[in-house]
Image 1 (cartoon, rainbow, N blue to C red):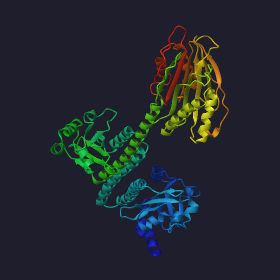
Image 2 (image 1 turned 60 degrees about the vertical axis):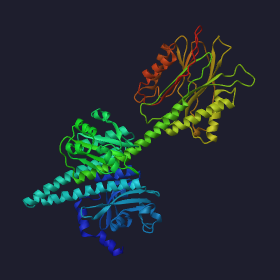
Image 3 (image 1 turned 180 degrees about the vertical axis):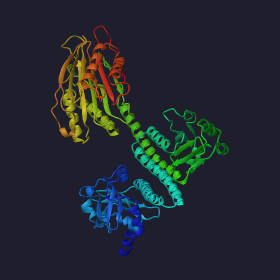
Image 4 (image 1 turned 135 degrees about the vertical axis):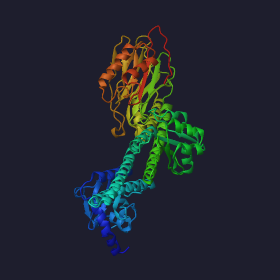
Length: 625
């Protein structure tokens, strides 16, 4: 394209007239700013613009992320405009690095605005004039993915619809000053504007709401709420294609009991939802007679139980084949116009991406929980001790943590030293709530066991120091808190007594319930384990545990709750421990968690308890999780 042709494209009078009719200028506009925010959020870019290209400048009625002075001016001269190329070419412009492109390598936008990666989609009026660009900007080279460009294209289509609505609104105002026929035409245009505006707003809300969903239940709820409020169907459903089966995502509100009756059915069954997924096309059922003529008795029965007259089944696009079907049903005759079908198609795309993300997250969480549970092994039997453990995961399935407990017998020293420890105990919490935290927990647990085996007869402080040395040397990058303890029979004290030696790396203090009901906190502790802290000195502490004593280790999920006082919950734990110290250990730990953390804790809870049997009782070693 010659320079004269480029200038003609920019200076086209009809295009400039359409720009004026939008009523937009270099002043912030709430609707346009919302498009920019969505682009920034969904594509994870620092800068996003709704850029309208005038004859001598570009203006930004929608803007996120620009620095001053451009943020205040909301405009630049055309010399700084990359979006002008979208107007000149009348097509998208996708550049990974402006500095390496012959067309843009000398653009002042690189140094003055920090534009490196650029993706711009045309914004058009109803006559096809390109008014500007909806663009995503990165301050470093960016390889734009196909999914990102599809999202940007969808948002540009919605933004173009909004611009057209504004143009039509101004034209409507002019038409109202004409004759009666012009007024009637304007009324019709107004209705189209209202309907189009509602559809545009629906797509924006859907993009915003579905971007934050992480579970299939969330996706189901968001889709139902979005479509029920706008298109007014009496039923909204989602059906997933899983191999040779179709599975409904059951509405947890219980408003559609029929979903349980027909929760699964074969993918080749005579259901309109299955057909839409098989054939990858929208299926519309106009009335019950049409359904009865072409589909199964089960489909007819479900249709009747839901009280439906009209339904539309829209395939959910997948990478290779549809993921399933979006279903809307009305209890009256309902004619879907072309605009509504287009909107449902876009919404099905948003929904499909949200479902893919939810399935991915659920898979990761399931793997993490399996890994975490595998680490929480049964407790060994130890003569002269009673032991029990309890692990209760967070109520939110997404909060996979690094909490763990451990109890294992230590090997005898080579010289048979009777003062050597008999058993090791650990309670710990690795920083984070994700699969990585669960993995680090497993590594840390194994490394700590190895340190105990490699340093027989050493104190817990020495063992934890060895763990920290390995953590640094092997670049494991594990951080968190823990209490590591050794137990051995104390032959210098009252018969049946044990000695506990422990070191605390930033963890909550263990609680010791004495035979008389008194509860003490073993509150001597040192800094937490963290690579940035290097190898801090570790100290070991000793205490004799006489018969009847009970030692409780726990993680912060027990006593740290938003809106509650840590000290008050710790004191509540002490009261229960002292009052019920002689109860069955399993029952005692369950009672503590139920009354302190509650049945649905906000964080993982791990507890480990050991009790020195009182004289005349037989300790029952326990392997319980």
